[in-house]
Length: 547
Image (spheres, one colour):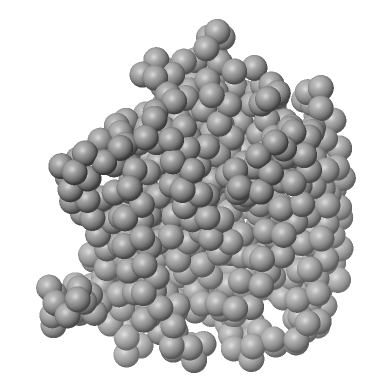
C-alpha cells in the first residue's frame, strides 16, 4: 500500500534538490563549464565548508544510512567494523592526500591515473588504474541506488519485474540530467541539504527510540537474544574467534581503500588549498560519531521487532529496508517522509560524485590517451558528460546482475578491486622504488586472485554460488596447491589477502627488473611539486588550455 503522506514529503524535497541541482551550474561558476577543471572539479576552488559537506556527502552515503545498520541487524557486532575503519582513516590519509593535491595542482592532474601517468611515464599503468577505478566505482554507485530503492519500497513502490525498478529509473534519469548540466557543483550544493536533513533525523531517532524501547540495556539484550536463537556462529553482539580477524582486516582494508576511490580524490582535488584539506581531515571524524549512532539503529530495529519488506522483484526479504521500516513504524508520516528524503538524497549526492569521477577517468585516461589524443578541453568535457550517464546506467545493471545478501557487500567487493591500485597510487606519492612493470605484475596477480576468491564465495540467501560476499575462511586460501592455513575456519577480508599478494609480487619483480637493468620510465614530477600550496606560482592555472 502506498504511503501517500510520506511519498509527497519525499517528492517535494526531492524536487527541491533537483531544482538546486540545475541551478548549481551558475553557482561559483568560472568562465566556462566546457573544461574538466570546471565541470569535473568545480573550478578547484572549494573552501573548507563546501569541501566538508562535499567530502562528507561523498564518503557517508547510503552505505552509512542503510547498509551498516542492516548489517548490524543481520550479523551483529561484525557491522561495527565501519566505526574503527573511519577512525583510523583520516590519520592514514592526512599526509598522502596533501601531497597528491599539490602535485595534481602543479601538473593539472584531474584523476589518480593522471598522476600515475606522470609519475611513471607509463600509459599502460595509467590505463590499468583508470579501468580499476571504473570497475570499483560501479558497485559503489549501485549501493547508493539500492539504498534509494529500499526507501521507495518502504513507501509502497514495490512492484515486480521492470515496474519494480521504474521509480528508481525515474530518479536515476533526473540525477543524470542535472549532473550532466552542472557537474560537481550540483552534488556540492545539494550536500548541504542532505547533511542537515541527516543530522536532524538521526539525532531525533537516537534520543527518542531508545527511550521508547526501555533504554540501551534492553535494546542490547533483545539483540543478544535474537542472535543466541540462531544456529549461526557468525553473528552475535560480540565478535567470535572466527570473525575477529575478518573484523580487523576489513576495518584496515576499508580505510586503505577509501581514498583510492576516484570519487574520494575528486573532493580533495576540488579543494582550494592544503589548509582546506587539513581542516577537513580534522573535522570529518565528526561524521564517524554520526555513523556510530546510525549503526546502533540496527539493534533498535531488533528490539522494535522490525520485519524487512519482501522485495516483489525477487520474492525475498530485503534487509536494506530495515531502517526505513523502523522509521515508518515508529514515527509519524511527516517525519518518516523527511527521513526517507534524507536517505534518498544521501544516496543521490555520492552517486553523482562517483559518476563524475568515473567520467573523468574515462575521458582523461582512455578517451584522450587512446581514442583522441588531440581532444580539446571542450571535447573532453562533453565526453565526460556522456560518460557520466553511461556509468549510472551500468550501476543499475550491476544491481540486477550481482544481488548480494547484504548491500554492504557491493562496497566491500569494490574495495577488493580498488585496493589493488594502492602500490601504484598511494605508495607512489612518496617513492618510485617499485618498478612500473612490477606494479603491473602485482596488479595482475592481486586482481586476478582477489576476483577468483570473490567468485568462490557463495550467497545462500540468494541461491547463488558466486560473489556472495567478501569474507573467506583461511583454509580456502590456496596458492598453487599449497594451503598455508589448512583447517582454519577463521574468516579474513579478501581484499587484504589480494593486496598482500600484490605487494609481495611487486617487490620481488622490482628486484628482478632492477637486476636486469630494465628501463623505469620518466618521472615528470619533482620533489618540490609535492609541497606546492595555494598562491604558489608553481600551480597550473585552473581551466588552462592543455595544448
